Image (cartoon, rainbow, N blue to C red; front, side, top):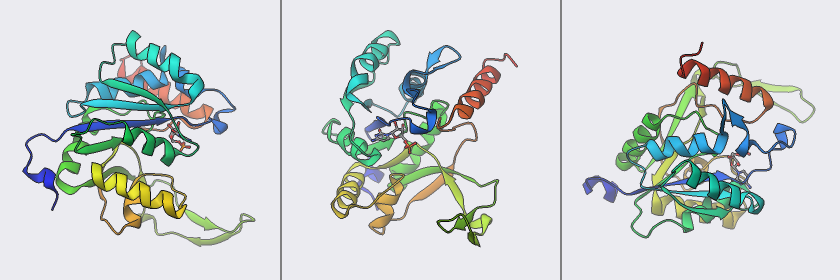
Length: 239
Ligand code: C5P
């Protein structure tokens, strides 16, 4: 189905949208927040650096953070970080800008939130391997909570069937041409997206889900920082 099928090892660029405004973090810049002593963005980039199937990394940040992120890439020897660029006003705009900066022979694009520092290199490699076969892949987990659709005032409209729902994470990995075309189409139509799969789904393409990781949380609120540090302490054998 995809041309990558015939290739031995597709070239993969990781795109890291990290240009958000941190509204739900009480204005704290979560990029540089230390998690057990190491900044969030460094932990995210280190996992991508250690993933065997990632060839290069493009990071999209706010203009004011460019210098510091570039400096951290040097300090932590993140040699796969080829470019640090300015992001856009929306997440998708940041991803699109990063996609345009990848090397010409790139086959796959792996989009990974800058705010997901606990992702393992193993999950990244698994997602890339699956995308080389299927063209569009995302890690996901079944939901623990029951989810309800609500009206504007908070009134419950209906309860969704939990068995049919999945919480989708990143890295989301795509055939490079497919993702670029999908983002472009979404952009043109003004569609509001919260992940990259939705851009691909809009074009009627099938997205395949693989098992995500419970610890691959997105740092969104101050409570997530507490959870993330607990996970890291466990990984370091301190608890
Ligand atoms: O807002 P949300 O939590 O979905 O953001 C997910 C990721 O997208 C974060 O890492 C954030 O920094 C990034 N982002 C971006 N450009 C924006 C908005 C969000 O790169 N304009």
